[in-house]
Image (cartoon, rainbow, N blue to C red; front, side):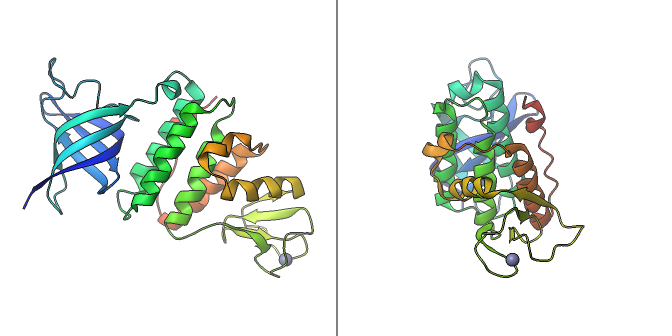
Length: 250
Ligand SMILES: [Zn+2]
């Protein structure tokens, strides 16, 4: 039986369907990932116009039926268009990369409502941040979603001898999602980032910081960190995570 439900949601992506309708992929607070159809959304006088764009934060009213692949979107109200993100190319690339990861991973994994709240706060913080290098927001997101899906990163102790990372440099390994200190064995084929003490301290802060304080973190290895985080996620979820939005990042 179908029921009418109201939920907040982030629009992940859209595509045209038939004459004038729109398929809208969204990540919702109460139902997780939803694929919906907005009938007549491309008609000139449709109330959906301007509301169903990628990245918009909306309130959606959905005719919801469990186990139905395509839900009917009855109406939608725009709550936040994240205008400051849209006016900034690096921020846009990061925000769309986050949405791409959600679409690729949460479509098949059961999302939790707290994670929706976290993602909304992260988008708001990205919108409000005054940073030239917003890639740190993507790194934070990749660490959190990894944790959410059951393969958290562990950066307090060496994965082999269990000693706190004291002998530097340490290696941050993709394979175990953990640290390996300088004196412990290390396979030549393992992919890793080599970190000095200051870099490890920054990474440890990144793992616990709230999105609103993210811009206070200075990481000088953001690009290689993002690549490493994506590799581990791709490996564990068996998903190809080559983000097309990230290619716009300049
Ligand atoms: Zn060790």
